[in-house]
Image (cartoon, rainbow, N blue to C red; front, side):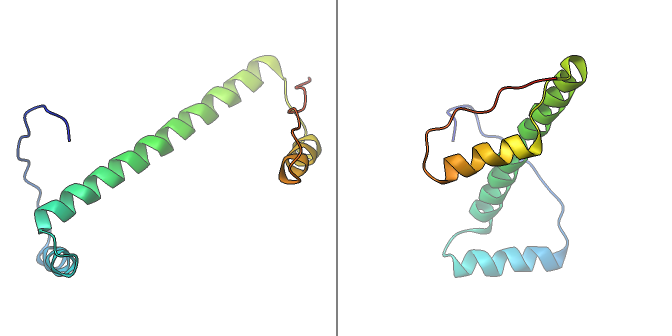
Amino acid sequence: MSTETVRPVAIKIDPEIKERVKRLADARQRTPHWLMREAIQQYVEREEKREALRQEAISAWNEYRATGLHVTQEEADAWLAELEAGEDAEPPECHA
């Protein structure tokens, strides 16, 4: 956790979820507070990675639309097969 000031945040959850969190926290010998913080942290990290991947895909698509450069599925499959076989293969050249 960072050294910045930690401030409480209230969230509303239904009684069923609250009880499930409490049971899980008890089983893990943790507090419900710890469990919810951990869950939020993992969710945010996962969603940040997902968003970065989405942005990378958008960027790649825009670059393809602008340049037309690409590799075919067959070229990519052949390269990946070489890598899977343990070979130190260079990626295929992009072409129009």
